[in-house]
Image (tube, rainbow, N blue to C red; front, side):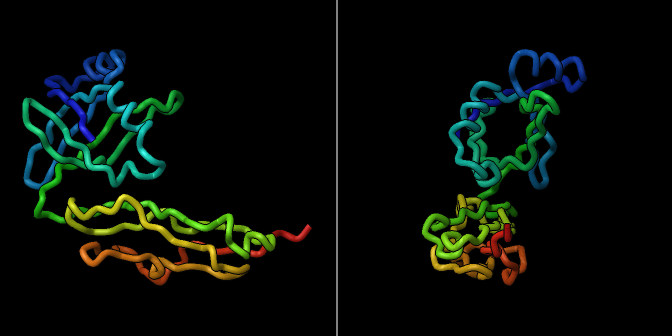
Amino acid sequence: MKLTVSKRTSATKSAIKTIRREGDIPAVIYGLGQAVEKITVKGVEFQAILRKLPKGQLATSVFDLHLDGKMRKALIKDIQYHVTSYNVDHVDFLLLSDDQTVVVNVPIQILGIAECPGVKLGGTFRQVIRTLKVCCLPKDIPSEFQIDISDLNIAQSKRLSDIAMPSNVRAMSLMNEVAVVIAKGKVA
């Protein structure tokens, strides 16, 4: 996703307030062995990208940052929101290098809830783990993992080991943990 950014020279509170008042977002870019760069992100452009992103995939989305005529690939490592308005207050970008691995939280998408026999019989669907931390090269970052529960009955579960893991992606979690379970429904 293309995002135009500009350098910011001042880091004072008044300068940052001015940036936010104009609708833009103060941010930083950092990477291994590189100094932190203070930048400003166009607020309208960033909000448009956020609206288009599928739910939960912000952490795995690679951004093309255009700064001073150069294009750099980056991931969002941290995003801060305003307490009451929920506007984006600050963004931290991690620069990516094609030959260095990166650790990301990949969302887990559950498929087959409507067809699940356990849910049809009154069981309650519970997703215990929503993301899986993985380590891989930037080109191999999965957008999401999927678990199909269309064959589960009440009191059955699927584990992280049921996820089809690509060979070039390494999980950073214990794969025997329960990811989703069909629990018994409440008795009236």
